[in-house]
Amino acid sequence: MPKIVAANWKMNLRRQSAVELAWALKSDGRKCWLFPAFPHLAPVHDALIGSELTLGAQDVSPDADGACTGDVSAEMLADTGCTLVLVGHSERRHGHGETAELLARKLKRALEAGLKPLYCVGETLEQRKAGKAQAVVKDHLSTLAGTEGIAAVAYEPVWAIGTGETATPGQAAEMHAFIREELKKLGLRLPILYGGSVKPENALELMSHPDVDGVLVGGASLELTSLRAIDDAAREIE
Ligand code: PGA
Image (tube, rainbow, N blue to C red):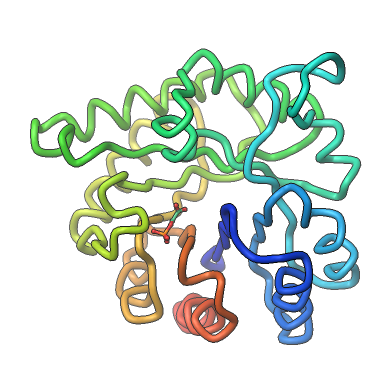
């Protein structure tokens, strides 16, 4: 299976720079998954027409259309051309106190609207040091029980996100193998991406392991040259 390269642009870029990046990736014939900020979804969607790039949102409301000021419903995202949505990112779990119960509602809403969630899991440094990394990840994965239509799982150790510190290929491979086993118990067969300070320098080594089906890239996805280099690494392995 071809390796997946997903770009999480987070709260970065401007309308023009996001569209330019999308255009450049399109003219390059890339097949990445792009997650721009909400205001950039529509213009990026238009730029992607005729390409093999896939559009996703970074968040989704747990509620259906209605009186939810500031929220964006799953149907609105689908209507804007999104096919994917991030759920469970640590910047939402920890930064916004999103609970397992809330994430389950988001997953349900996304799936009902035909969106495919990219579901993120991962432990904090404290949890890893306490020997609880697998227990935490297992707990995060339990939210997927009974679901159908998930795009992929991303293992993102919180201590590696935006810190420049990457999990070693060994650490990533070990957790990916564990996740695969846990997913099997839930009756799920999904691609498992690694995320957390992925860069052109480490992408090839990380993705070389058969249990690493791709990468979810934050910081390094904001620059065309680094995103291209990471995607080139993915293509090299195919
Ligand atoms: P990073 O972010 O590549 O900047 O560490 C990854 C992510 O949070 O998805």
